[in-house]
Each structure stands twice: as C-alpha cells, then as structure tokens.
Length: 307
Image (tube, rainbow, N blue to C red; front, side, top):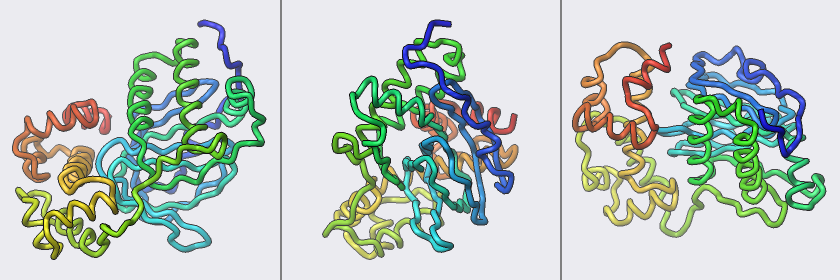
C-alpha cells in the first residue's frame, strides 16, 4: 500500500460500540474503516428514544434514500423533528445526543477522525485546530456530500480501503468540504435546510404530507394533493420548497422509495406487488427509480438487506 500523505491515526472506535444494542432493528449493509474515517451503512428503526454517548469523532449521517424521519432530543424533550428527503446531520465530537426514528431509515454514517481532521486543518489550510467550531447541523441539504458519500461507499465496498492514495484523495475532498461547509473556519458555507419564508404554509404542507403517506398506493395527482391541502397548486409547490426543500413530486417519490425499502426489508413480498403497493406504475418503473436514486436494483437491495 502507498505511503499516506496525511499520516496514520489511532484506530476509530468499533462500529458496534457506536451502534447501540437498544436499536430495535439494525441491518448493516456495509462497514469499512481507514486511518482517517469510518463508514457504516445501516437500516435502522428505533421507536423508543436512544441515548448515544459522546463520540471522539465527528459523525456525519447521510440519508441514502427516501424520507429521513427522526427526532432529536435535548434535556428529555424533542428539540428537532426531521421528516424530509435526503437529510444530512452532523454531530460534533464530544457531544451526546438522543434520537428516535419510528420508521425504517437508511443512513450512511461517516465517522470523521478528529485527530486526522486537525492535522488536515494545520497542514492544508494553515490554521490552528482550535480555530474550528463544528456546526450542530440537523436536517441540512447538501447534494455534494450525498453524492460523495454514495461514491465513497461503493468504492470502499469494491476494495478501495486497500488503496492508500485513493483513501487520501477521498479524505482530502471530504475534509475540505466538511471544514468549509460545517465549521466556522473561514466563514463556513452553511448549506442549511430550507428556512421558512413568506411562502411557507406549514399547515398546508402537513395536510399534504399526511395525505401522501396515507395514499402512496394510489396514482396521486398534484391537483388532488393541493385540494386536500386546501391551497392552490402554485401555493402548495412554493410552500413545499420553502418548508421541505423539495417539490411535492420529489417528496412523493422519496416517500415511495422509503416505503419500498421497508417492504423489501420486511419479507418476501413479490417485487411487482411492492411496486404497486408503493404507487409505482410498474415493477420496471420501481427498478428504474431505485437504480437512479439508490444505485441498486430492488432485488439487489433486498438481497443485501436480508443477507
């Protein structure tokens, strides 16, 4: 293996020490580690609150498809609810956190070695590590990080963890983006979750999302959803973009994917039945969507989840 340009780091904490036993459902789709970061993709469901101990590493959680529906607690109370597609969360090192996820979530966890990041900041960015303050990012939208995480996971599965130079390049890209986006160093770019604006209508969005969830097996039209929400189609589209960061169609598609992921993980229901139960036009339509959004076919996804 080639010599690392960043330098070795202490081994990261084992995955199973981080993924608590009290999770009701944990399916590991893959896990790899290097001297700079560890990654672990999990299907998780924890309907009761789970308290996680502070980590010595910075944790990045990347939703890998469908809606990411979780609650974050502070001082025993719900501090933030996330129910949106493709959400990103960051937990800074040393910070305890509590979470609840009533439905199945597919998440890629990246544990970014804090010592390696400190060395990167000193060598590559010419700043002292204590100049950095990591943002407590909850439900952010970061298309670049989602794409990078997906590529990183696939590369690691194909043996990239044995290529030191390739790992160096991934780390340099990941670390630079993390520092510029999720920390106070040099301003931070703050790729945040959508903020409410004058166009936001939370009650209409809530009515629309509930209707979508309850009728995923139906061929829902945008106009029908808008009528249930009690607003015009134009206003509902603007409210979705302002509140969730997605159009109603994008949100609906994410929910269909999430429902299909649950059914695929739950048992041996035929793929064609799953497609129709989730509102896809056909099994081939569901397959095309899975390939485009998750990089894997439904059949392969089921095989990986169920071992």
